[in-house]
Image (tube, rainbow, N blue to C red; front, side):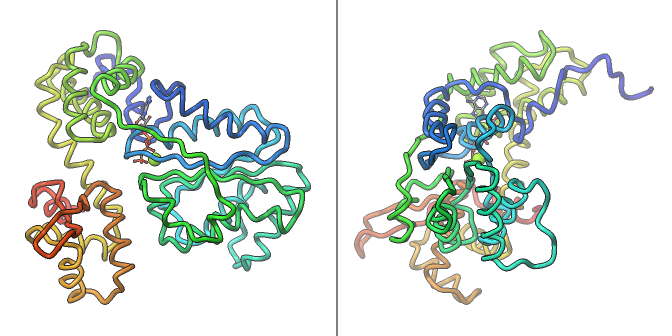
Length: 369
Ligand SMILES: Nc1ncnc2c1ncn2[C@@H]1O[C@H](COP(=O)(O)OP(=O)(O)OP(=O)(O)O)[C@@H](O)[C@H]1O
Ligand SMILES: [Mg+2]
């Protein structure tokens, strides 16, 4: 072989740096993991579990904690069917229940259209038959198509026992939006009183420990020293998302290999960091739909505007209601592309759309996505 000599790789397992990788242990999250599992305990004895709302900024381990517990349930607990739904990938209540159907029945929903009431009834019937408790995690719930779908879904899952007495269900909602509770309508609010579990952002020290642990499984011994990981932790803290740090480590490893070095140096990190940050941003931008991209573009091609001013400008391009417009803005805020901040201006207290990046960084990402 001319270019690749496999025995000289620094990587023991490169996949551990991918964002989907689920570690066996999540450090600094004992409290949250214990809260989630104790809320689920009633389901071990065929009772209704306590509903939950996991909230916190991006990259704070919400998805990983719930997935880790679901993995354990799937392996060891007979009485519970855990269903994980990524709300970014579904756009309707029907879509959510199709995922539930698949887990409950063990095969996908037939592709011919089944009306919702029939789908719903068949899921409940099976749950009673199998005497199982259904627990649905609705992840990234703030990115769900709209608030109406969110309300419908939570309501449909939780009111199941009214339709069929023996059915037991629970919901774990996961999101980044602290104002989530305000979006629940009164009907849902009356049956959904979740235990709120907060995931605080990691400090530099915590980031260091998490990244170090990942390096120990991802790289061979001696491939990276603590001072280099410290540098990555500092840069990650500034960038605001641990995924940037994980990606930087991976790219720094590739860079060191390219130089033919057996060690990752700070120079490798500095060389790949900006690029890693941009790749990450491009991935975020690529997830947006056309309207969202257009709004983001308008924000980053304008001076700082109030939400009202931005709405007027955006209306010239797209016909939409203020509510729909505000939903789009909140989504961009949740993805950390912008901040919505209250300011005291001449005309009184108003919300202003603040940029989180240099204009050209976002405009480039939009062009390349
Ligand atoms: N405490 C931890 N220990 C080890 N790895 C962690 C920890 N917290 C987060 N990670 C890692 O960081 C990455 C992001 O975590 P995760 O997807 O769980 O965050 P999140 O809170 O769901 O973020 P988002 O709100 O953006 O969905 C994952 O690769 C995960 O393995
Ligand atoms: Mg998540």
